[in-house]
Image (tube, rainbow, N blue to C red; front, top):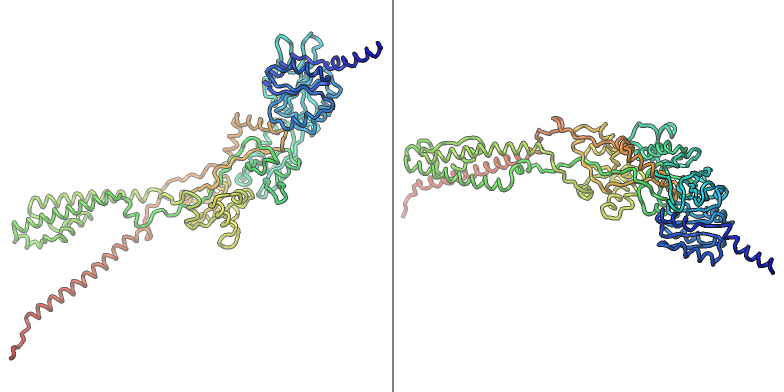
Length: 628
């Protein structure tokens, strides 16, 4: 009886002795990491689990579970909040538990692990555990040189599936007086930046053909207008390669990744979905269908694409003669002209009454038509036919001449200024392009076709319809050099990425054409992001690198280099149109011809009228014989 009783006590106390857990250490860990939801995994029986739970539940939600026959990992996969994980490393089941985590993404940035152990010989626990560079695992074990003090070690593997080795380092301590203290003052990815021996599989998307070895092409600075954003992003990733000292195996594809009929993705996204590629050397647009296959990272490239066209003529020919003066000014000129005609009419009437003989000798006329001709001649700088003798009449004539000179000078200056001003374009959006009968084309790249095809508004659908079958029954998706050459001919709009278009425009367009260009955006600015495998442990590692480049100005420098400036319109004598062609001047000729025709018609009417009047006088002189 005594022997069986001792065995029972030994079996009950054995888990407690073999897996001692310091409650104050665990609470200090929760507090230091600011954790409100926590799980403690032990090998205690139910009574000890309840006692441990009562001691740990202080301002936090704690779940205490036994490792044997555990399904807690399935629950962790459904939890997207920050969670603390405490494991009793002295339990016999601890190694198996950690190895089972290989099937789950629990060694990530939202799970904070603390493994307690009775000594510093704990490597065997993590030898086959799927740790990565983003893992947050701390091991606490008693300090053999100081009583009631624990040593805190940081444990991680740069890349378990890439044959990385286990890394451990002392990072802090714990005691009852000073609490849970870590010596780490820098980002963990800075201290873990040595990835020597790790090789990543990557893929770059090049839509245009290239010559020479792939690595030399990606490192080259030549011909930046081709495959621009892919080479830009690849350059940044090569900088990260030098920063972390890893290596890359690079593949090439022509597609960024689009949804296929069987529900899978092709190109870069498809390669990451099938775990062939760790991350992409090309940035990606955010698309809803891609989000279920990959993880997006930091934004690196802003894609600007727009329709480029030459400004159509925005002003009618008659506007050249009318628009220099506003409607109210023209009304005032007409009113002043009527007043001038009336004042001169009064002057001639007064002269006729004062000295009729002199009035007739100078062949003056007091009709309204004569006064109108004199006023019109003054306004056209042709002078007045005759001045009245009276002071009041001469004053009216002088004022009319002065007013005519001012109006003539002001109109001439306004006309020249109107011709020199840059015409305002009639095209302000894509609908105006379609309504004005422009032929349209687009750069022949897959992402442009995808953007047009995914459009939901009527304008985008109409654009895609016209691009699919152009007017000559050929596709409107063509090479940039061909499309931009068609733009120079006028009445053609070409949709292209501006980083591709600007170097071509600057090298092939003359100054006049550059000043005539207009950009009309249909999709606006598109952000492109770094892309990684779904739940990739290397996302934060690479994003920290990219952010570091942004803070140090490297990203800005590369953007300036790879995204060329817009060609500047230099307003010189060669670009300013100061001559008037027949298409602009013909309204004046039309007015002249109408005046000539009208005067000829009036002349014919006058001849007929005088002829009839002369016949009437002859009839009055006829002698009709009188007969009974």
